[in-house]
Length: 81
Image (cartoon, rainbow, N blue to C red; front, side):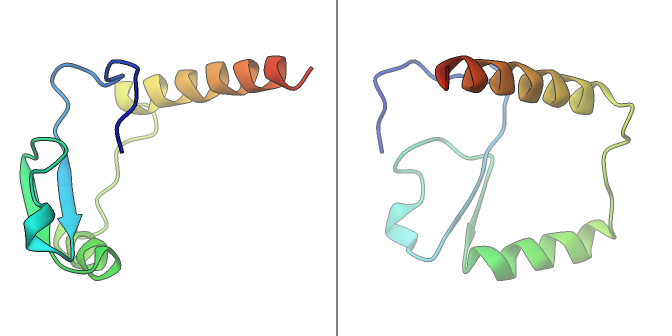
């Protein structure tokens, strides 16, 4: 699906593409890693390989994500008025 807005990702973002259909690989965005298979099974396998690794709650990534959530909530509340 294409959107008229420019991409809203960090310039150094890396995507992992999971698809059941090999013909779809690389059709929409360039992926750092492409996995052929069911997304649920691939996610379970990745989680197993990562050994339950999680980003620290005080990490910059979590701080950025929490701020985005806060701003999105405010924007949504404004739209609902």
